Image 1 (cartoon, rainbow, N blue to C red):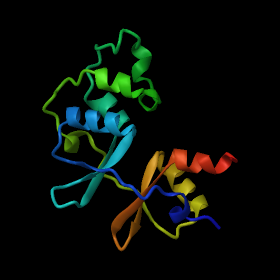
Image 2: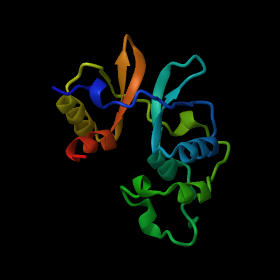
Image 3: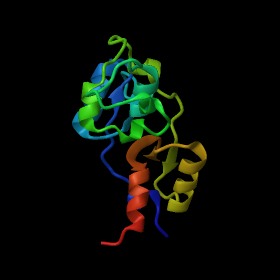
Length: 155
């Protein structure tokens, strides 16, 4: 039986809650990821943040990216389809806005030995795209929807 440990990525990139949303956008773009756990100054997990949070709460709604995006840009699901280039060109309405102001304070976690089927069930019921894998209360990995989809593809 496959577990969270078998499919997780052991590299957990996190962002501090006191970073600006502009710094967050740069961080996500440079690392080619769509979201990350949020930690406080002591490294304690306090939430998660994603492209969707930037789009829904921080981006200027009248701004067009490269003249290509329309009102559909703000439709559900569009945030996940942003390219790094589109994100880097997005205008952040309030450049002083902090990550803590747009993050989701709920952090979904599972233990390393959690069966993959349970991991998938949690992600589906929570409508989330990533969850953290923990050992003794510390994040040791992250599982994303892409990690689960890779299970369906044979090399």
